[in-house]
Amino acid sequence: MAKEKLDVLVIGAGPAGSFAAERLANEGVRVALFDGRPEGEPKACGGGVTSKALKSWPHLLEATGRMIEELELYSPGGKRLHLKLEEPFAIYSRTAFDSYLRERARLAGAHIFNERVTFRPRANEHEEWTVRARGGREWSAPQIVAADGANSPIAKKLAGQLPPAEMEVAFGYRTPLPKADRSAPTVVAFLPGWAGYAWAFPRIDHISFGIATSQDAFDHQSLDNLLWNFMRGYYRMREDPTARLWSSRKRDARLDSQIEAELRRVAERYAARIPGLAPKTWDTRRAAGPGWALIGDAAGFADPVTGEGIYYALRSAEIFSAAYLEGKALDYENRWRADFGHELRRASEMRRRFYGNFWGAPFTERMIEFARTHRGIRKTLGELIAGNQGYTDLKRKLALRALRPL
Image 1 (cartoon, rainbow, N blue to C red):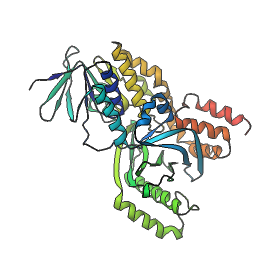
Image 2 (image 1 turned 135 degrees about the horizontal axis):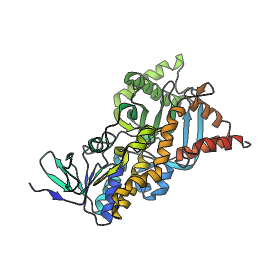
Image 3 (image 1 turned 120 degrees about the vertical axis):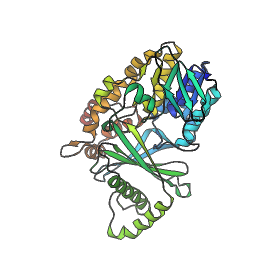
């Protein structure tokens, strides 16, 4: 069987891969986009897209999603902060979002193959890359782009495998949204006793519940129990405004039992790994070399504090595509570092402190406590959620606004 020859092979049809394939195909590049996921299987992800991403690529608003203008934040101790966002963000079903971006790539002229492929390392830099499907069909090209997620086998071969300490785990459940209830709140709650957070993201027809935390400290049973506690609390508070998120009273026992019984009947579980690179790794690990490039999660491009990666998936795809189209594909390495690399490295430095102690309590506890009474701190927190406030000057911004009169 003869190989099909192209210019670029893009492995992985999530946001990074589809966006890169679209931009390359629009300029006449013969690009193949490989989607190895079973049809209709969504990636395990909350599906939040920041206002920064929506402003950068307004066409994302054409995908079917839900705009979020208000957010409820909870501290580890259960303190609640209601934020009205000056700049809304969007929540998408990843099935719908990824399908939308993949269809744009197809319309641009990318050749899309619903195939799981394996790749063969080249013997030298003059040889083309070859990928092969299970049935024996093969494709080759001088440029390969890995966009196949945090577990990318291509990234492991070309850039090195990441240790468990530099991976985070996200898992959760999808549950029905009763009666398409658009009043269901969007919630982010920092975990009591753990580094990480839980979320409840209402979508068009269901709610995505989840937890994100570090893999090296992962205890599945304890965290799963914590997530079920969070889910019960979320529904309990919709029944009784006086109820608390993380804890229930004796009189709530019957309601909790009813809630959990129904959720266990209908909930669909999901799980995934998210990169959370250490500062030294940001300095040493490369995302490009002769004839190859890593984008999105495959490159480790996710915020080590929050795990958010869709913006960086799209931006890395955009940066790589521009470099390739200029005939300077190797410049991609310097360009992503100059564009967002410093920000992600700073987030990596801050992660331990973000989930550490501050004045005798978790920093997240103090942050929400201060934001409840101080408009400037609350504004900065909203900007951080929107993606407009980076980590490099976060401390300075918080200090300046904290000193201003209320």
